[in-house]
Every structure is written in C-alpha cells, then in structure tokens.
Length: 367
Image 1 (cartoon, one colour):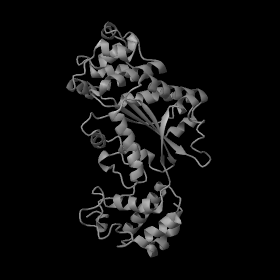
Image 2 (cartoon, one colour):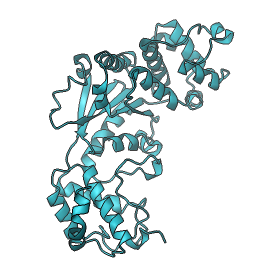
Image 3 (cartoon, helix red, strand yellow):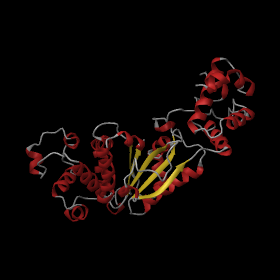
Image 4 (cartoon, one colour):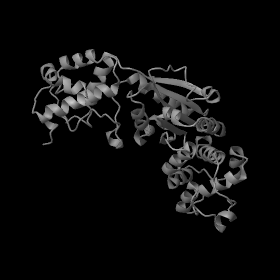
C-alpha cells in the first residue's frame, strides 16, 4: 500500500506544475473554458480560415495545462470525430537571442516526417506541381517540400538539413535544394508551404494547431526581436491562409489590462486576433466542482474507495479555505491542498479537517 491509498487515492491529485505524461493529463471542472477551446479547435477542423486566438489569464490559471491537455492525441481524435485529426505542436516561448529560429526549431523537433508521409500516402495526397503552385511561388521551398514527402529521401538527412546542420550534397543540389535555410523568411515560407500541403483540402490532415506558451516572455526580448516574432506569427498566418490555428498563452500582470498589449503584440498582429479566451479567477462553485472531478477521476481515485467526494478533506475545510483565499489563483489552491495532503500523510491523519488545518496553518499559508 502506498501512502495515498489510505485516502482512496492513487497519487496526489493536486499538481503544482502541469503533467508531462499524457496519461496523467486530465481536465477537471471549468466546463465553460473547456468548451470555448474545444469550439475553436472544432471550428479549425471543420472550416478553412486560419485563426489566431489569445488565451488570457493570471499566473497559475491553467494556460499551460490547457495547452498540454489539448495537445493529446486522444483528445484531438475525439474532437475530430469522423474528420481528419489535426497536427498539433506545443511550443514554449524561447528565452534565447534568436527566438524566431528557436520557435522554428521546436516545431522541427516535434515534426515526425515518417508520420506526415504516412498521412499523405494513406489519404492519396501526392506531391504535384499543380498543388504546390497553389501553395507557394518559391521554387526553392517547393523543392524542399517535395523532398519531405518523397518516401525515397532519407528522413535523417532531411531532419539534419531542416536544422541547418547538413552540408549541401549533390543529391540535394540535384533535387533543386542548393542552399541552407538561413533567414526568418525561409522558416516562415517553409512552414507555411508544409502546413498548407499536409492540410490541402483537409484531405490528409484537417488543420495544424500551434500552442505558444508563456508568450509574456517576449517582453524580455530586444525591440528588434519583439518585432521579428510578431512578424513571424503574422507572416506564418499569411503564408498559411487556411487550416492553421495558433493559440498564444499570455499571462496577465497586475498592472496590465487585456487591451494594453503593446509590450507583446504589435498592431499588425493584434488585428489578427479573432478570439480571446479568458482563464479567470475561479469562483467558489467552480473550485468545488474542480476539486470533486479532479479527486474522483480514475487517474487519481482508487475505484469505489472514496468514502466521500472530497475524501480525505471535509467539506467544511474546503469551504473555509476557499473563503479565506478568495481571489487566489488555481495554482495557489493546488499548492495548499497538496501540502495539506502531504502533511497529513506524514503525520498519519485519517481526516483532514479545519482543526488539523488550523494547527499547521502558518506553515501552509506562508509556503
């Protein structure tokens, strides 16, 4: 028996940081937020126009969790229903001196060439000049896309080339690829052409979804890099006018309103935003629903082992903490209940009630 089983739990449900293992990524409560994100993804699956969405919320409001949850294969398959599944990428905003190159590199890191080739083959999507001519007029970029979807071309060589590390060989020159990718515009045009081809008429893939998390870190960049990143996103939407959905996760600060985004988004990009999804401060009922669904999900709760829906916490304790911490972030509540659970286990408590909380309150609240 592990230490959590006495409470009918498999593990501690209150994660302070989002899970990275897909099997541990669940959604609890906050149905309205979930439905808003689902609606945007479903719309990108069913309709062609490319879209930019701003996810807005305070630190610890669940933006990273949302990005990782909706990047799960089974979640995307369910949302696609009978349609083609989207191709989804989770990107953490880079803190480097070359943010555009690093965003491009993260996408290439996650690009499975074998997978997209199989998608194209299984759905009779073949590289043809008539299709490529509709996607890009850049002959150099066309030739790279042709190689990516050429089953005879080495995936290893292509990956190395896409990273910019491969020495140009006769085989690449003969295929019309006579130089390396080196500029922001190269990265934009290649990704635009690649995404446009794999989603062409939604034949092989319904859409491409890119989540850019921690976008507020753009404020740490130079003014030149801020401009370059804004141009990258705006141009990527221009070069992929259909079937691209980009989510920007942006943390609200105490001194900034949603309308005051000049530090992050330039005017040309702000005008491209088609929706704002706010992950706000949860109210009392939302928090209790979240806790009930989180603690009793099969990922955390041993089947038929819960004596009450909040075991081992009493309802009175939950109400008291919610009342005293009113206005706190979801992460803060997770921190408190996680620490309470760990303290109670170490001290052999059977029930976590207000009396026990009061006895260790100073240690919990100051943490």
